[in-house]
Amino acid sequence: MNFNIATIPGDGIGPDIIEQAVLVLNKIGEKFGHTFNYTEVLAGGAAIDAKGEPLPQETIDICKKSDSVLLGAVGGPKWDNLPGDKRPEKALLGLRGELGLFANLRPATLHKALKDACPLKPEIIGDGLDILVVRELTGGIYFGERGRRDSINGEEAYDTECYSVKEVERIAKIAFDSAMKRNKKVTSVDKANILESSRLWRSVVEKVAKDYPEVELNHMYVDNAAMQLVRNPKQFDVIVTSNMFGDILSDEASMITGSIGMLPSASLGEGTLGMYEPIHGSAPDIAGQNKANPIATILSAAMMLRYSFNLEKEASCIEDAVTKVLEENYRTGDIMSEGMKLVGTKEMGELIINAL
Ligand code: NAD
Image 1 (cartoon, rainbow, N blue to C red):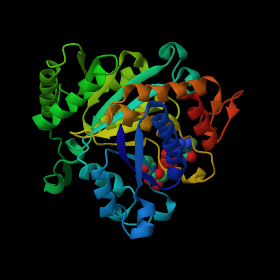
Image 2 (tube, rainbow, N blue to C red):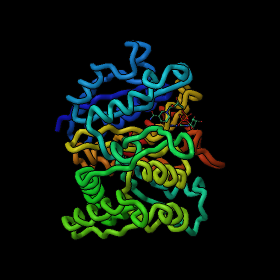
Image 3 (spheres, rainbow, N blue to C red):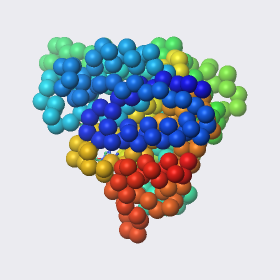
């Protein structure tokens, strides 16, 4: 098969890690008979330097025409003093909006070989963890009506949590579809004992669940979910939740896995076009030094194969190769521990390619 991928290396370590992900994809193409065509585009600080804006129209047009987008990271101290709407990070929000990406999928996977990096007790994590947080990305309190007004107590401020049936339906479907590709369990997280928007959320999720009889659904209040994530994280398969709750819980879930350099993410919309990127930033402190861990980006490419191109076998092949290299004790600096073999960005990429 033939796929067109827009690549956005971005800033800092972005180019270092995208290079390795592309090499891995090329090897997958060779092995399974696919052709991946890449168009590199600018966003973030690199785009500000070249074009005077963080998200040029040309980038949006090319991303929209592609089958998928692979992004490194954007931002860095060079652009820190620019006003809000001129900053590199603006490119991320702009791309999500332009591409209609309303679902953010963040797996929190703890590899057996990296168990020591997990801050939880060994008996809690057993032989590893594999949770997928599905966060609603374009609705809720981050996008609701907000403002300031006078009250009898003086000035006050307000933000509004608002969800429509349609918004909940589409994110719930993504969660159930993802669960069908995993362990067939969905936990919907809300605050339905207090919030009306959560009560609507809960009833819509229950309705969508009827189309997925094989998937087990349970509901959990967000305060309990935050606690259960550290108390008994193995009970979770897919967690689906609103924008703000997802923002918080996905960070909590990733902390459990120990390293930011290992975690991929996907942002999806109605069609198959998605944007795939590591959860970490541009790490300007180690940019261009062959020190960045490319695994989060390589695993993001695996998610792209699974979710946008429906190439499950190829996606698993990448994930298995990463596991194998970790089990052979190779580590980049961020996940290094005593007795392990330290390698750089390029060597880690090569080892994964050889393991494919
Ligand atoms: P960061 O994730 O870039 O770095 C935090 C720490 O983790 C640093 O010590 C860094 O060296 C390390 N690190 C991150 N990724 C690594 C990897 N792959 N391998 C090895 N070590 C890694 O977060 P920050 O320092 O808060 O932000 C730096 C810049 O990135 C800022 O401009 C910020 O706005 C931007 N940022 C961008 C995104 C994105 O593009 N999605 C996300 C977060 C932050």
